[in-house]
Length: 135
Image (tube, rainbow, N blue to C red):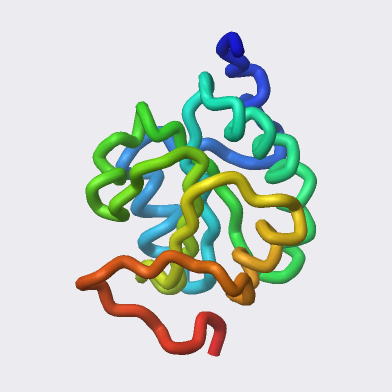
């Protein structure tokens, strides 16, 4: 499948493109933040982009910030979050990783992940996690 960067030029979901923006929008935010990592040539990422655009306003209404990051641009985050596939999703609260999922998510699954209620969540060994996502 050909590159489809136009899918990722969203007016709904801001792309994080540098460490300063990451720090301000992900690490220093007091509430929950969902970040999707994508690459433009990935067919599953291309399928996920409009789903994220559709869900973002509803998630923001629930107090969950939503962003995406090109894994080839923000490559320094891959080792930090042990990302091996795209799309990958991380859920951060108060600057701390609380959950990670690698692979495509259907709309209901993506919303459940963002809310901290998806049953299948990958936890990373060696990192501390909150026992409850949203106290």
